Length: 298
Image 1 (cartoon, rainbow, N blue to C red):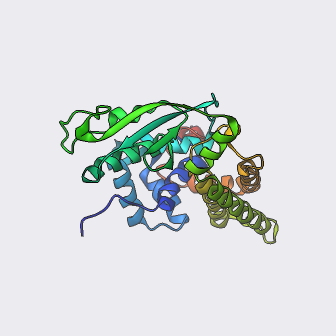
Image 2: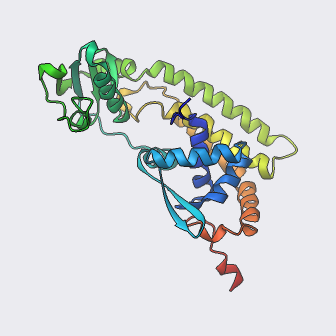
Image 3: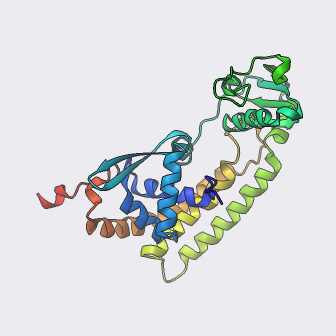
């Protein structure tokens, strides 16, 4: 069977976690492998993951002798930045950007490309043939009209590629909230967030119990907390408060996550510092709290 580039999001999130917990801009491969092993990912799995993420443009690499040093890149870096620094939603102007499409079944590959590009741009689908979003749908011009690479882009209204039209849809506040709830599956997303809150509360109870987690256990718990909070919150784009229910639970989940990280950071930081102190590759870590080894050996 040919290898696939479809990898579980859990394993990809381990790479982002390694960069985040080190607060690093660049991390050498051996240290990524070591952190991932602590999280439960075998070395062959991590090396395969790094190769695929490179191929997909989610990582960049430079060589230092025989060692590869990696940086986050592309869409993965964008999503990682959202997780780390938060997400400021566009303001609600009273109108959605819309894409109305009617692409025939014989051109379903083209239709799926359009829908995939729309999802990556943060658009939702309140009903088949209608996409709504908060920013201009620039992705429409980036979807090929034919399967071959030399094909022109979609031309709005052309029969050959079906109908694709863009525009604006003005709505009163109640109607806009109802449409947003359907387009981005907000009731299901809220249920996910409530489950995440419950799981994080249980994790905090474990942190309060004796004995307190240390070393690898603390690092794994921090990864678990981030995984719990990250998956539901970022299953849809950040929406302005005008489009969300009054009791939207995302902030409560973030408060619980921050509480867990605060509890774990001293122990995790001490553990990682000890590991990096004995690593021959620590001086290749760029950025973050880890200083070059030369600072200690002058």
